[in-house]
Length: 324
Image (cartoon, one colour):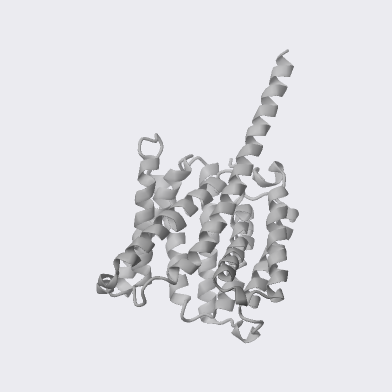
């Protein structure tokens, strides 16, 4: 009787784990849809607005949107070690966004895409080093396939112009930003494994966004003219508010929720879907751009995400070793 009850409890626990993993994957699919659809929306902002200060405002709005979700939670106020880790996670966000805006006019779009597709592979490697990523050759193959597909989509966007693929000091600095972005989910997973961070995804989202927003704001105050913000129109503010709540608040919450169940490599793999979603949005607005040259990259990206979704619980949910 006792053995039967134990087996029944084990089946229920496994079912709950599978359900959580499925929800995490579906959440990351939604993450890719929101992020991919947000890139074209940024183009509607007025010219001449300071990008770092706009990002700080966007992060502030996102953090404020998290407040109703975290108020009253027992562990939402971090202790000193957790606050230091949140600050480091915020530094990762500030580093990536700050370098990205700096590189926007110095690095070609193709070079940025080629470097950005390495992020899931970097997250996988950093996760292996910190012990939060299992040894999984299957996941590594999926990441490689997704990277090739995303790069093929970037090449299709430039019409196969390889002259835009350049590497120098500017590109090296942008690569540092990619490493910072890849480190964010790894640090989240590492902190969760050691019970340093809140178990609540909204609380982790709030503190990392708040820390990153403060650091980006400091950089913006030093490097950008604050008076340029007075040029914002009501439509600009409403768009920034939308990007703050959805493209920052909701997406980082979905990422934190996914990180609680999946490994950093699996979470960041969904970034390969972002250029595919942006491509679909482009085709809706410009159907004349549809061509066969978009097909190879699209097939590879979809295949990689499909295989990732079909992966079992054991290859996505358990780290290689527990913290001792």
